Length: 204
Length: 204
Image (cartoon, rainbow over all chains, first blue to last red; front, side, top):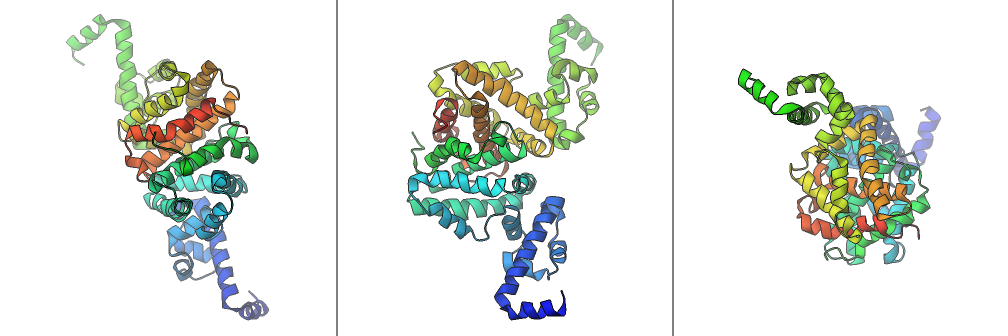
């Protein structure tokens, strides 16, 4: 960084500089996790790649798991933002919004981040725990609470079966024709099943 | 094998001896694939562990992939047997039979073989291909043909999303409560979704 850039960055104030740090860490982490896997990519190496102090990982993400969830899952940073998006519309179309949101996010980079996620999840219990806390607790349980659903714990994990299975077949094993099916067709095919897990009868 | 055992085996005739070879290979392969993964477990080592000639792998399974599918998937040997079981009853309960059959088979060993399968599938394209040929072609497409469904290719892969996702959440990441839910409750919760992929409207 040049002297002028340093001055400019200071002028932009603390918050903007913080966002730069955060963005740089996310970009560096995404590369590192895809290259080396969850274990192989160290916090120290990611911070060095981003050109920031390793303490910033704890500061911004609460640790390696949080950084992983936000970089590799590649969703907007705040789960509450996703939740807001999923709740923005009629309850009976929530299933559709879920499928459309996740397919759009994951399709954007050809499914690479989803595939990296699954490789880590299937070999690392702590990644599975991070995923659970992100998807199940921060998003689905809150969504189901907002909808007023009963049996939220079971419904949240049922939603996970469909969403994870969709990701595996589309991005990891790439079974055709589903791997190449356009998003609108996918939404029509899968959203009603997701909707049933959210609001339908699941015990008779 | 003692001399007496050798004589006894000869007396039982060629077919029985062949079935012994086949069973020994399946048991050895299951151990080897779980211990060393798909790549690490060689045909030669599996055959040695089973005490038979390596050529028997090609003879009985058509190669390493076939041996993997039949040992690690741990289903009755012939896909046509599974298919027969899934078709044995009313078409509108086929989704229920699918969920019950696979959960029963996979639960039987605590999900270990499903987890081994997924670890191999997510790192090995040839295992993904073996899985596809086994599940999608040998079972689901034939099932859908027997049912007289249209859009069989897409429906078969939609079925795969639900079944694979169920396996991941129950046996690999083990999200609760789904990981511990009893099979009857699971069947009630999931079978209608599977049924929709088989016979329901999927494009509007």
